Length: 96
Ligand SMILES: [Zn+2]
Image (tube, rainbow, N blue to C red; front, side, top):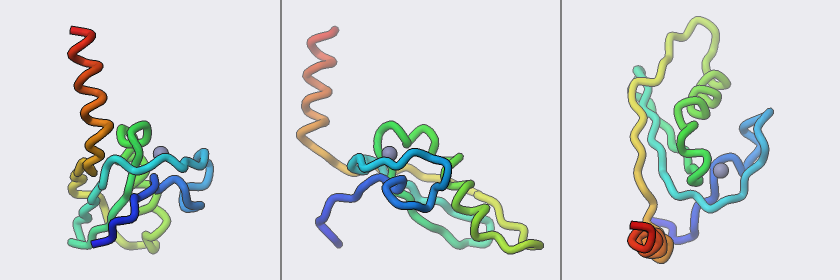
């Protein structure tokens, strides 16, 4: 397993029409297709809510005409970034 931090998948040029994002990834998104193929996306906090939309964009690019491929399941995994999690907890406690 690589220890280098992942960067949001929008840091690349795979998503034309979307602003480039160089935020560190906080979520690993596994996209499983009806063909049993799957792929991974790495998303930062602000792009995580759009994971299904972004997965669909990638998928559309790879579908050859006539293929019936659709997303069957998207699973989100948090990539642990402990210092930040602790920070959030403290902020939440202060607000309560
Ligand atoms: Zn992002």
